[in-house]
Length: 271
Length: 271
Image (cartoon, rainbow over all chains, first blue to last red; front, side):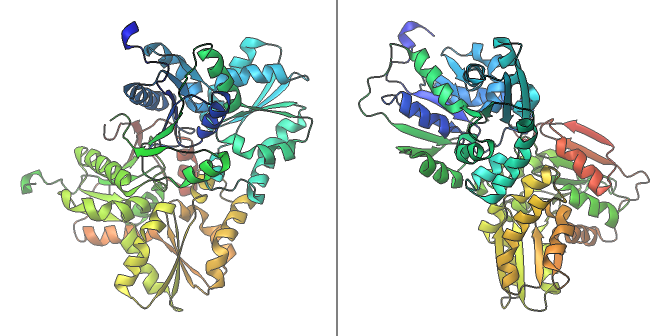
């Protein structure tokens, strides 16, 4: 990309996720960078990514990134832990704009937060199988102990809106019991849906455990990356593209996250 | 299609589903038609279909059917209630081989089974929203009362292998309580995953409620359609194509359904 074709400051920050969960990242971006335009792409036609292979998640991530670039994004935020773990390292160098995921910022925050040296990570089956969090934490401090557990039922429970429900609590207790028994003092919420369960998780873990919200840490990393070159847009907008027209969970997320959506349209990513 | 290019008797029955759940139909086909070759396509790269729009499910169903035809299928079984409800009516006439879904056979069996005249239907969000079961039942007998409820958490619970688990039971009790309170005596298991929960559902409903297994009734309809022209294959095979290489749930289904899989490969459906 030549200097002349570089997107201007007022171009949108492009954000993609397998579905709607990445709006937790948008919510944090809004707070950290209130003047930025945001273009969010939710690949709802192929959601979820969490049980799929690295090859398939990489293909989808490239198609999503291509679409955001076509729409003029000045940077791409991979607001999906599965795509950050499985696809981002191999595709980032293909693109002429900065790409940032949720994984490295979350790992760095966890390393900073732990005092016992024992960190728990929860995520989708694909994220946990990739060991991406464990490797990212160990790159920062190889002495730390990491207990990573796949929690594949949490996304469906959240998408059903069971955010404060005894069934969700029972499922969480079962997932978390082993790591709590091992003395972890920090848990990385390694899926962008999970901040919607922060309250329930904090209730189960008690005050001795810090919850690291990958959405929040990703937004801070984006702010740092934009540095002294932020947008000066006076009417920052949130435009949403979905790849399928079903939008049930969008309303749950919009309400829980207090987001104002300026436009919503359906667009096909890839082929 | 000319007579000379018509697939021979020994050509496979093509079966597709959004994922692995349709293997419950394969299991019943094996029992009803032990000498048939079966080619199963699970669209695991885009699973699940149950929360997606009619337009997207129709596109996927066409791509799956095209692939099965390319592989020489002599008929196509849509072993997915969501695709049977949303896509089959509009695509069946495009294809030169017979197509059969799980919905009409299940509706017919329910109409036959009920004595109280009150039928319950459980299925995915998309299947229930389409009202396809209610309409199919009312085409056969408009006097019957139909209580249809979306149970979107059941597929993820089944895919996690929680077939006999207190969490699954708690979720089922919550979904079924309203219809049981209204005096239904028949429940259609309107998703090909659900036969894997038949035991738990029967335990909750008690002996006064008949469970209509759409997989079983679909297999009987296929047998009737093939009529006096069955395969005489001596070594019937089950070949499986998946669109993504993740296959965790395949092993759960294989074990629960006592299936022998002769070959497994990954193939991209559509574009």
